Image 1 (tube, rainbow, N blue to C red):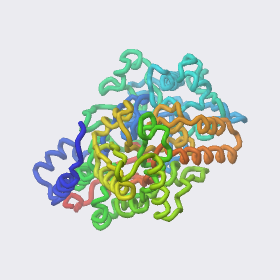
Image 2 (cartoon, one colour):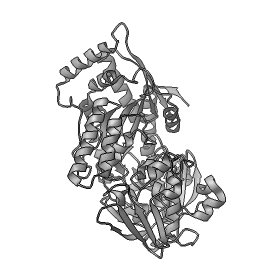
Image 3 (tube, rainbow, N blue to C red):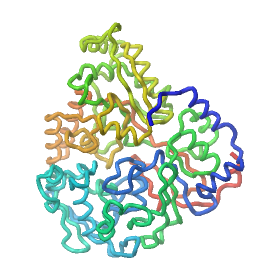
Image 4 (tube, rainbow, N blue to C red):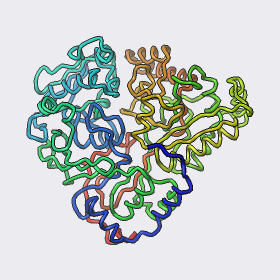
Length: 549
C-alpha cells in the first residue's frame, strides 16, 4: 500500500515505542508469542522478511539468511567469509582453471534421512538457469559452460556444464576461469533440491510441512509478516555440533520497533541498529553492539527505460553531483558508513574500487557543473524538473530521502515527490517499471568485484536500473575469460569507470554491519559478507540484570 510521508508522526511513534523499558503484561504476552528467551530458541531480527524460501527463486537478503540455515550448498563460508567445505569436503581445479571437481561427504543427509547426492545439485543448478524457473539469480552462475545460452532459451538445460558422474562427485565445467567459484557456490541460489519432493509438489515444495532440506535446520512455520520458525534437523550430517533447538526469524521492518523488542528480551540479535538511538545504544549497550565493514552498496537507481532519465546521462550526472555524501554519512547515517562515490565497496578482495571523476572536487565546483547540466537538459527555476523518488518503509530510508530531496531542491530547484511503500510493493513497482528514481542496495554474493560488476550487465535478471551498454558487457566478458589475475582486475576496474561515467545509478553509501547481540548468545562473529550461520551459535543463561533494561 502506497502512502505519503508522515515524518513527524513516525518520529513521535518511534519515541513512544522507546519510552520506558519495564516489562509490562503486554510485553510478556508478546514475548510468549515470539518464543521465550528461556528456551533454546534463538530469536533473530529479520527485517521485512523473506520474499520466498525457494532457493532458486529467493531474491532478498532476508530470505538468504533463512535459507543458509535450511540448506547447505557445495561450499560454505568460514567465520572470515572465505570459502570452506559444505556438502563437498574438498575440490580440485584443472590447470586451466575451467574445471572444478567437488567431492561430496558420504554422511550428508536430507531432513527425511535420504542421502544427499550429486544429482541433487545437478537438478538444482539446471533449475536455476532454466527459463521456466524465471530465477533472477540465474545469471549468478553464467560463468558455467552454456549457462548464458540456456538462460536465453537457445540451449536445453541438459547442456549446462555440470555433471554427476557418480553420487559422490559433482564436476563443473566453466566457460572461462572463475577463481571466485568456490565462494559463489556457497550462495543459497546454488543449494541442492530434494528431487522427489520437487517432483511431487512442484512450486509448493518450499512450503512448511512439505520442504525437505539438508541444512542444520528445517522449516517448521512461516507466517508472512510475522515470523519464520526453523527447528533443528537431527539428520544433518554435523548435528552433534548444533547447539540450538530452533531459530525464529522475526519480521520487523521498523528499526525502532526492533530495538524496543530487543530491549524487552523479545529477540536476541537485531537485523539493524536504529541511527536515531545510536548515541543511547553506545552509552548503554556498548558491549552488545557489533559494527563491521560489509560488502553492500546503498543506491538510488534511475529507470533508464522512461523519461526523463532515458538517454539523458547529463541530467543523471547533475542529480548525483549535488548530493553531499559526506553530510549524509556524518549527519544522517552516523554509524560509520562510508560515502559512496563508486559502485564496488572497499574491502573487496584483490580490487581497487573506482570513483566518479568528480569525487574530490570542491562542493561549489560540483554545484556549478550540475547547474550547467541541468540547464542544458532543459530545466530552470521557471521550469523545474518534477520527479518521484520511491523507496521502502523505514526510518533511515525516509531520512535519506528527505535529505537528498532537500539537496536537489536547494541546488537545482527540483520538485521531488517522496513515496514510501512496503518492500514487496517496491520490488513489484520496479519490476513493472512504475518508478522514476528508486531506492535499493546490492549485497555482494561472494567476495569478488565481479558480483558487483555483473549486477549491471544488460542481461542480468536483477539489473534493476535496466542499464545496457555493449562496451560494458564486452569488458565483463573479457574479464570472465581472463586467466591472468592482474589483467582481469584491470578489465573490471575499467568496466566500473565506464559504468560510473554513464550514471545509471547514484551510490550513496557503503554499509557497515550493525547488530545488537545479547550477552547470552555464544559463538557470534562478524565478517564482510554479513554471513553468520545459526548452527555456529548457542544460548547461555542470560545475565541476572539483562531483563531490567
